[in-house]
Amino acid sequence: MGVKLALLSTAAINDALLAGARESKLVDVIGVASREHTRAETYARERGLERAYGSYEQLLDDADVELVYVALPNALHVEWAVKALQAGKHVLSEKPLSRAPAEVERAFDAAERAGCLLMEGFMYRHHPQTKRMLELVREGAVGELRLVRSQFSFTLDRPHDVRWSGELGGGSLLDLGCYCVNASRALAGEPDVVYAEQTLAPSGVDVRFAATMRFGGDVLGHFDCGFDLPRRVELEAVGSDGSVAIVPPFVEDEVRLELRRGESLTASETSIANRYGCELDNVARAIGGNEPPLLDRDDAVAQARTLDALLRSAETGLPASP
Ligand SMILES: NC(=O)c1ccc[n+]([C@@H]2O[C@H](COP(=O)([O-])OP(=O)(O)OC[C@H]3O[C@@H](n4cnc5c(N)ncnc54)[C@H](OP(=O)(O)O)[C@@H]3O)[C@@H](O)[C@H]2O)c1
Image (cartoon, rainbow, N blue to C red; front, side, top):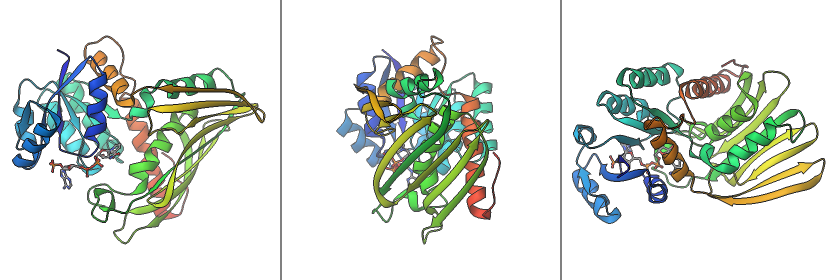
């Protein structure tokens, strides 16, 4: 038996995690909680899960649950991560943990007090092609890194989606742009200053967001994201001698890594790996003390600092420092 995991909510994203869990030999999903008991029961029956909890608290009271997957609207991640940690559970929280660095610190403080693992769920970071891209850039395969360019958009046409709610932590930056920010930081380090612009939806959340970041040294990054644009998912790191791109980054298990020297394509490698399966394997091994968590406290806090600076810059029209 692997690490016993339970799902906190019946979120749409659970199906992707469940597919990953089927590939992982290190984790077993034993149950699901919902605010409504019948919803949990139906969900558990349809997915073949053994246990259904009629409240999130009931899940946390189950002594058999070792790991909780927090798949809630963004504004509830820290609240329920902390409750789960206080109940002695390890936590994998969906991204972003929070836009507020102090909230991320609070969650990791709770993890440290409980002696439990907490990880922010940027599943694409666990894909071997993402790791390969970071390695190539570090090894100088594109020369000196100079620019990181990324995009993530789709058309959100569900009017009642949680992504439209400011109260629940919606908006395109926190939903989509957070991947661009995360990948840019992984490639270029932490930004010194950011400049951002946003367009607001009638609900008050950003429906479109674009930003430029200056990283330590001489590296620039720019990205855009949005809910009122066609689907575009791109990530490219450009150096003095070439570039490397993942096609498409973030959202697929089958991805191609393209390396260019000058204008010539010198390598194009496709690989398939279940991002959630890789993520769950890392979480389970980290819980067992067999390998370090790929994403840790420092990474999550720095991520929140950058998101917060981006939102401040977009709100004030001024540059902001994380
Ligand atoms: N969908 C994706 O492709 C995707 C991909 C990567 C990451 N994520 C992340 O996963 C998280 C969940 O996203 P999702 O798209 O899967 O969300 P979703 O389908 O809208 O599900 C959110 C769940 O949260 C629970 N919930 C608790 N309080 C709620 C409230 N006040 N309003 C609405 N729902 C509430 C509900 O479960 P119960 O009613 O069962 O309690 C609901 O099913 C987000 O943080 C998102 O960033 C999603």
